[in-house]
Image 1: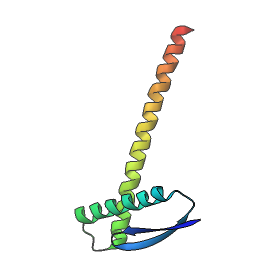
Image 2 (image 1 turned 120 degrees about the vertical axis):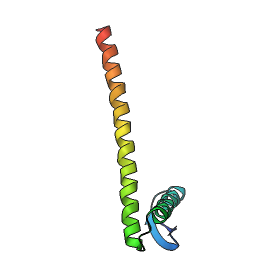
Image 3 (image 1 turned 135 degrees about the vertical axis):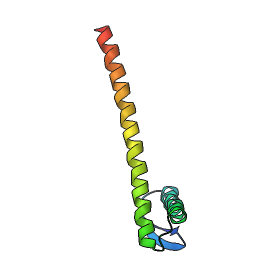
Image 4 (image 1 turned 90 degrees about the vertical axis):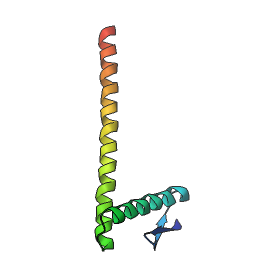
Length: 88
């Protein structure tokens, strides 16, 4: 297990993981960028509130992308079903 230091809004967080270093550091970069964006857009004066807003925003982005991926998969499946029905 390796230890990585992620810097988020000027604070260091030590993370122990078996994941690839670039992957872990990229996560830290994404979180730092999102928190800076949320802090600038909605100044809360509280690190905790900024973190919660950032989490809400990141989860929304994730679920929106996941839904779009699922819709694309469903369109592809329906297209393949239509092709099979024409053949049969």
